[in-house]
Amino acid sequence: MNSVVCVSQVPDTESRIRIASDGLTIEETGLKFIVSPYDEYALEEAIRLKEKSGGDVTVVSFGPDRVAQALRECLARGATKAIHIKGDSGKADSLGIARVLAAAIRETPFDLVFLGKQGVGTDNSLVGPMLAELLDLPHVNVVTRIEIGEGSLTAHREIEGAEEVIETTLPAVIMAQKGLNEPRYASLKGIMAAKKIPIETKTTGDLGLTDDEIYGSRVRVVSLSLPPEKTAGKKIDGSDPAAAAAEIIRYIRDEAKAL
Amino acid sequence: MAGVLVICESKQGRLQKTSRQVLSAGRRLAEASGEALVAAAFGPDAASLAGDAGSLGAATILVVADPALGEYSTEAHTAAAVRLIEHADPSIVLLPGSSNGRDLAPRLAARLGVGVASDVTGLEWVEGKLRARRPVYSGKAIAVVEVDGRPAIATCRPNAFPIEPAGGSAAEVVSVDHQASQPRARVVETKIPESEELTIAEADIIVSGGRGLKEAANFSYIRDLAHAIGGAVGASRATVDAGWIDHHHQVGQTGRVVSPNVYIAVGVSGAIQHLAGMSSSKHIVAINKDAEAPIFRIADLGVVGDLFQILPLLTEEVKKAKEQH
Ligand SMILES: Cc1cc2nc3c(=O)[nH]c(=O)nc-3n(C[C@H](O)[C@H](O)[C@H](O)COP(=O)(O)OP(=O)(O)OC[C@H]3O[C@@H](n4cnc5c(N)ncnc54)[C@H](O)[C@@H]3O)c2cc1C
Ligand SMILES: Nc1ncnc2c1ncn2[C@@H]1O[C@H](COP(=O)(O)O)[C@@H](O)[C@H]1O
Image 1: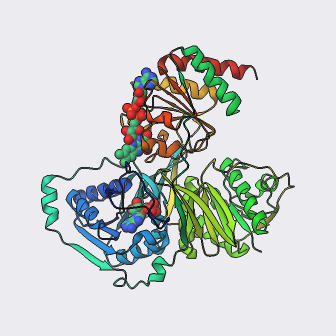
Image 2 (image 1 turned 180 degrees about the horizontal axis):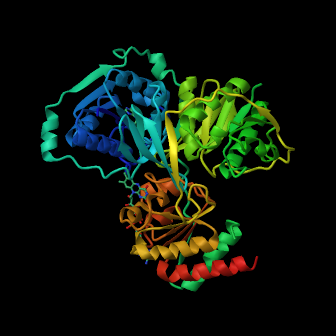
Image 3 (image 1 turned 90 degrees about the horizontal axis):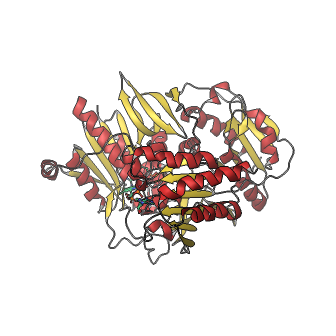
């Protein structure tokens, strides 16, 4: 079973976000970058499949030089190959990113492609289904469990207040949700072993893509700004529980009009 | 034909609340662009939504009545949505930001070679183009994006747009035929939890519990209040990770993003990843014994006190208030 895992690198969720002078992007200097949390579930699942039935786990990332670090981390956890497609992913829209990933994946043997259900930060949740469409493969989104059968796969998909069990043919594209597994940390041995694995680098030109296909944005940021400071509301002392309860009731009834 | 096409979802022959919100958002865009608002729906019940759709301002409802479309399937619904778009040639397509809407929009867009603005909280028609507002980086920044291409597609965050009745008569039902195909991925079972709990995705009121509850059994404090007030039960990640409650209750960056009318955070500290999921709620109440807890920075009404003392009284008061109606 060969898997490809698409990995995006995002600012640490604790980061303070500043807007760059162009007014369109975030200021990257001083930011700490991490592997997007949902991609960790995607990677872990692929590594577990490899441990069970062999094959390769190829991690792919499209982005600037800094994403090599994210790929190294994935190798240290157990990925066996890494492909870095160099480019300014921040200037591409989701369809552009999906086109780059599709072109890279077509050159790699695979049975399953894993992604995160959402890249934390920009929170689009778009690349996965777009990639599946470009590869003309079935996909299952927001997956909390998978079981592999003979040429098929059963996946559990989380929806509002329920869970769907979906059966699909292979190859297929899976978008990982929290709950799919508990991602491991890299071991020292893994970190050392990863240093010996070369990261294959490619340009988008190598993949036969034009800049317009990737950066000819169909969705373009026209402004990025900080939200207005929320003025903290009223804060009351709750040492008299009855008075506190009464004030909450008043607020919900009179101001939220919800009682 | 042209216009603003809204792909709707229904349950038991009625439009889902999120779809009503999207129709209202679509009507405003249609007014701004001088185009028609067109509703669309799939499955055997689709035509029965004509009244609902009309009352929200749609003159027409396009219907693909294939019974196989009664249940969502990415591939089958993508194919049917493509047919609708070929038929209507809309300049804008809006979908609810539900599980299915957010699954369908990107697949559809990739097939058409266009982009999607996802999970938007505001929409505008500016000089012949769709502009959408969307919170990014856990609400630490707000992006305005312009969507090029025809159609321009957007999914709308649940509860971000008000429902605005337009008082129109039933929409005219137009059937659109399509070529049914065999999807490769199919739903073989849907597991619905036995207790018919209200889900946080659509609830108007959410009562959320955090580690301040001390142990799993104390989620009863949250459930009792939620039940009395007619709201859904939310949770912080710390409680989910501790195994006190199922993940589908989790609010935040790695849970659900919600924007109910009222959000009551109980024993939740207000970590940035939690705020990411609820700071766009319209009225935020926080109960926490630590006066310095970050949740108070965004609470409209903050109560510094002990949840174990306040919650039972609050639940009783809510019951009394409800009885008076
Ligand atoms: C990548 C990443 C993603 C994350 N995603 C999420 C997410 O989606 N959602 C999320 O919630 N968190 C998320 N977190 C975790 C987040 O950082 C916090 O750890 C978590 O939200 C804390 O949960 P809590 O508020 O319940 O617990 P705590 O921070 O421990 O807060 C408990 C609060 O209860 C109060 N309290 C205690 N006793 C009482 C009492 N008797 N009466 C009243 N108040 C009392 C305390 O004063 C305290 O403020 C994420 C973290 C990371 C790193
Ligand atoms: N630049 C990228 N390189 C590799 N994978 C990506 C990239 N951007 C997004 N992805 C994948 O697509 C998923 C969804 O991202 P998004 O659609 O941006 O929310 C992520 O969790 C990743 O698995």
